[in-house]
Image (tube, rainbow, N blue to C red; front, side, top):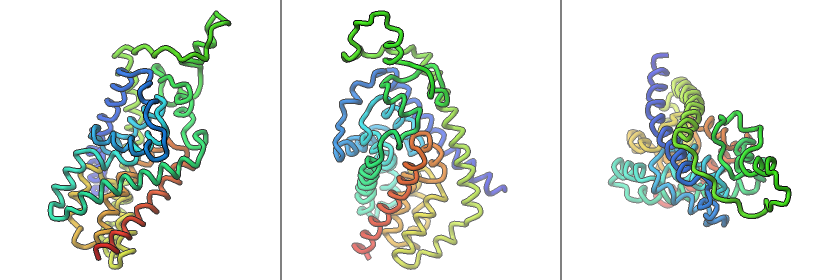
Length: 326
């Protein structure tokens, strides 16, 4: 129990600051651009959309936990689905802090500094193309979908209360006394909400996400305690076995993408190059502590498909690396 408690504290202390950064970025975006009109101008192309979303990761230094509230803001503000998902899946690896930490941990392996960002983009692109096959109504959670359809961020209710009530454009249509008013015209830009209201909304969102993060960290700490990492490292004798073992290890350890390179350095000599890259690619996309946060955005079907697609894409990339370097 003492080991699990120590691991839980480490995971939580590591992830909470980045979650706070993500909520602050989301709240700032809601205050500066309440209508989200510039987000709707981002490319909706199946390839260019995810690439543009991934490129946003260079400007937003947040790990995978902090990317969830930002990706949610992109979705509800009307950004193309591929752009928001591209940011969600690729940005945790493409932000400058992660790139710098990878270089600091592996200065003698320059191929990794190129392979990790490129692999993250390929995984993100594959997941976006895969999830586009599911209609938005079956992919996104009901509250995210409702707010996205309205193209009007809600300000006075929590995430759990967003399922009911008419707000934004539809509410204006319902209360407009002029029946001859043309509601099909482009709506005026949404007024900027008061800063105090934005901060209150951000605080409620942070608390709800933090509850899920705490639950995810507890699960990760327990699994990591009951399943010692050395067991998995001992399975890494073959090229394929090492890749699968390190993929499972990345899910179990659930360490933040900003420091996972230094953790990987401790066992890099025991595994194949592809397995090392698999550890650095899969964890930022999906791990035990992140699954609860992603459930706020994706329905179970979409979440399971994303997990399976990420695992398959990372496995293929890692196997190719092993064929190339071994």
